[in-house]
Image (cartoon, rainbow, N blue to C red; front, top):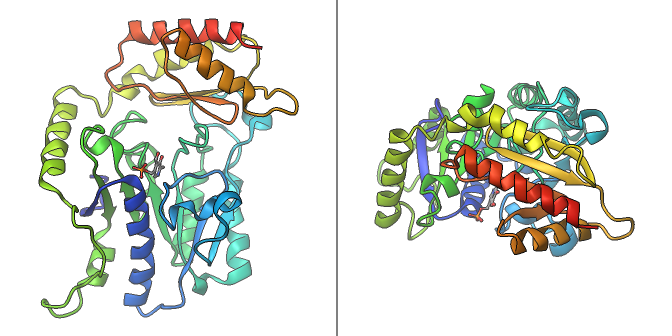
Length: 336
Ligand SMILES: Cc1ncc(COP(=O)(O)O)c(C=O)c1O
């Protein structure tokens, strides 16, 4: 678990983990006598799954859904940070957007901020140096709970068990899924601090503390898969393998730097992105062509907008990394 968050609530997916955490923040403030703290803050380029709270960022497609939601800017800034290896230098001040939201609504109206410590699905957006620290400080000063959505970063992706370990920044809650069973059986988990847990545990023993749960929370099969997975991670040192491979991975990724269409390359742990210049007037088309061409050449890539996101299995070998970038290099040379 992401220490020191030592209490866990089991779910069946990342979306359910996010929904659980968001509800928990509102219920927590109520339990502490701060019932007006209900607003939820996300980031513009964020992805938190497909449940009600999670998709409240996707207003273009689904309207406003949850009310009382605001978004601060994401940290994507290739004008200043293009081709940075690891965490980029510039952008800690993006966290100050939260101060504007506080100025607008007052901290007494805000329950929580949810961010992916490294945004995956929206194109591998690496947190600038100092950014998460600044967000933490503003949240603490204003009694706003900070949620790290670690559905992608949890369980080894950044070369440490969690982004919490990688960054040293401790949020109030961490949402997870995917890696907890290595995707073998659906499962998710929300980790919370003791102080949040204790806030709910004030009533008599026979009364339900938090009216929320799923039939399959902590399902036996999922628990067995999770225990087996965690054992394998430990036996094979997979929670830190991303750190061991990071330089090799970054070198291989950066070998694509001078290939056609490439306007940025970024990496952290065992994740990386190649951003392509969009075709004028036809955004996403170039990356989609690359996706089709890569598939033809035996490589499965994930594209989002004109960004190719690469997040290989933690057991990938150096030879396979070489093969991956060999094919991707050919793909970039062949797409228009
Ligand atoms: C950061 C993040 N949160 C939540 C989710 C949703 O997870 P699920 O698809 O398991 O509901 C995802 C899925 O990719 C994700 O990347």
